Length: 188
Image 1 (cartoon, rainbow, N blue to C red):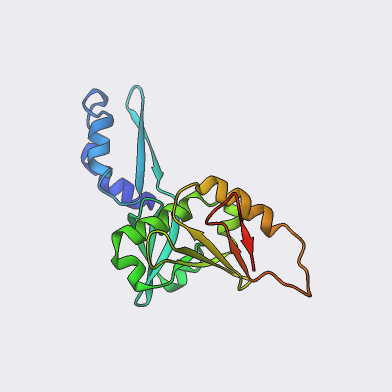
Image 2 (image 1 turned 60 degrees about the vertical axis):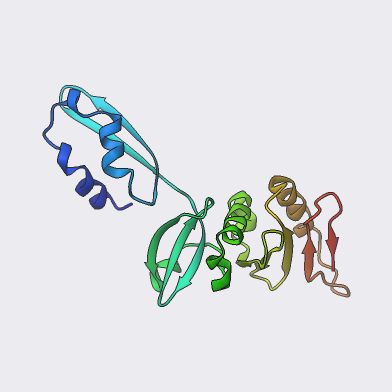
């Protein structure tokens, strides 16, 4: 959230006595913004109030016309950005409109993206799924990751990180990683 937007939302409490402005009041004023995750309010007597806004972490973006919508791990739309501004975010794109239209499938995709460690997320191009059990990740180097469902996300991420760190065999390059069953990963 831009500081100017936060200041605009908090304008009703400017000049109010500190005892009359509490956590709940501030949360009510800014909590409706999609990007806001948590709000912390600290009174600084005699007449100052410090407000700290922690935003949701975007994990994916979805193309929408000439812009992109950023989404959180819980599948909540956080912001709509122009194509140029969206390109500054290193986020995977959800590749199909159908993935967004089915809430369960979209929740599965964003849940998976929310569990990915930063080193893997930055290597991603896009994510897609036809069902909640078929989440597929496309890496920027053209390789594919068959993730499956959102279960055991931390273990799948661990296995995928290990597989991505295996040196490439030029005679038998790996084009696909299947970590849908993390205790029995498959490469093709």
